[in-house]
Amino acid sequence: MMLSGLSLFAAKELPAYMDESLPMEQRVEDALSRMTTQEKINMIHAQGKFSSPGVPRLGIPDLWMSDGPHGVRAEINWNDWGYSGRTNDSITAFPALTALAATWNPTLSFEYGNALGEEALYREKDVMLGPGVNIYRTPLNGRNFEYMGEDPYLASVLVVPYIKGMQQNGVGASVKHFALNNQELWRGHINVNLSDRALHEIYLPAFKSAVIDGDSWTIMGAYNKIRGQHACHNEMLLNKILKEDWGYKGVVMTDWGGAHDTKEAALYGLDLEMGSYTNGLTSESEFTTDDCYMARPYLEMLEKGELPMSTLDDKARRMLRLNFLTAMKRNKPLGSIASPEHYAVAEQIGNEAIVLLKNSPVAKGGNPLLPLSPDVKSILVVGDNATRDLMKGGGSSELKVKDNVTPLAGLRALYGDKVKYAQGYRAGKPMYSHVEQIPASVQDSLRAEAVAMAKNADVVIMVGGLNKNHQQDCEAGDRESYALPFGQPELIEALQAANPNLIVLLLSGNAVEMPWADKVPAIAQAWYLGSMAGKSIANVVSGKVNPSGKLPFSFPVRLEDNGAHSFGA
Image 1 (cartoon, helix red, strand yellow):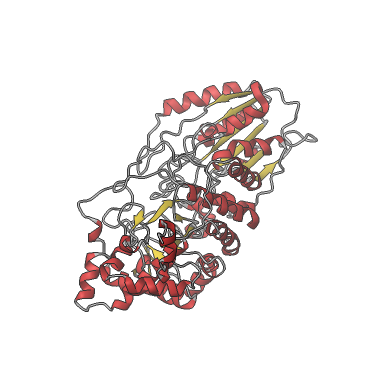
Image 2 (cartoon, rainbow, N blue to C red):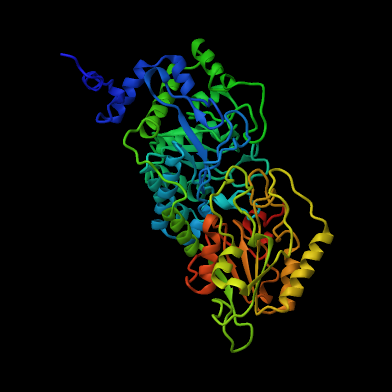
């Protein structure tokens, strides 16, 4: 009797590692027993910018990662940092994690993680590089917008549902940056010293919750040193605390370029090396991925007996578990991208994130400015951030969005031709590691135009704050000043003098100095709200939504009121 091809396949017994009905550890040990030493080595370091190898001989697929934590980043070239120029990688940008933290809403955090996991699935990603839970220590940290604020308890509560929502889709979370990445200045070499009490009470609780309660499948190490040893191969942090005390079974990966030593990487808890032999960000080199610390140099040390084979087997086991949970997992959902459902999640998070900082009547006995009166006849919107694509720039969290409802577009959709616009100030192109200098004459001219228009409006809405330029809310460079940039303080005071009916909306992931706060009747912190930012802002300005957000970090009056700066530089 002839058997069909399907029957032949069904009759052939699957190897144990491919049988998803068997216990995970049985599958892992079976796969490990079939692998060569070279195949194990291959599995624990990158093969391209965002991929690490599987085991092709055994049908174990490669792993694919993407930057997060607010959306799936556009496709990057295989072996340089340029964008590949694809036309099918536009996505939903979700609000930044500071905005999610401001909702104080674990249910929304789950919906956020799930929606992002669905977008990652559609883009065929196995691991999303986020969420970030480093503690907000100084308002100058360029990367604070990627994290969940300064309160260890709040971050601990919110990180768990995000992870669970994402990982239910078969997409691994990568909680970062473990640990004490609390500034970008000198991040590659700064040595952080602190007490055990500060470490365990302030800086580790959110990571501990992510591991123990969230079961995060991966963790990303930080660039900095802790007590003299780099975080990506730190004996105390990775071996003692993470793997021994917390019982972590997942994968520890480097931040890109975060490995520095083969022996330390082998012995002190690193499982996957990514990005080495570049600076992690912008440059290419003559080296290949076989030159990674955990590639040929590791293999040579094993062959010489300088390192025990058990170190490699432990790393390979962890990589196999991750692979079986993600890339090799059958019956995953198909995922979806830039869908009405995802836009609704982004909008709802934005609705609940906006924080009303001040809302006083302009005149004694009058009504507060917010929400806007339905009878308003003319609205002047001022500010570069009212029209800017705030998903561009910022470093690794830069996003390519399918749709972007700007604050100006959101207000015009609601109020039509009642809305006029003046740029008011120019912020320059979003650039990584460089700042575009804007001539003072340009800023003076834009300010004068906005002030002249303000005199004829019923109400003025200033949409300012920071953006994703270098030395603002941007990776690899901290802010140089606590003040608002681009002459915004002078602009705000001039607008208020011209028209007392002034609302200031601050778009930022950081606290800012507000010496003008006493003069401005209405102020709201509106964060970076992603694709649906304009809708959420219009919802709050109009009164359709009551602003219920709560600050996840403090706004010191002066920089020196912040603990990290109270003793000077």
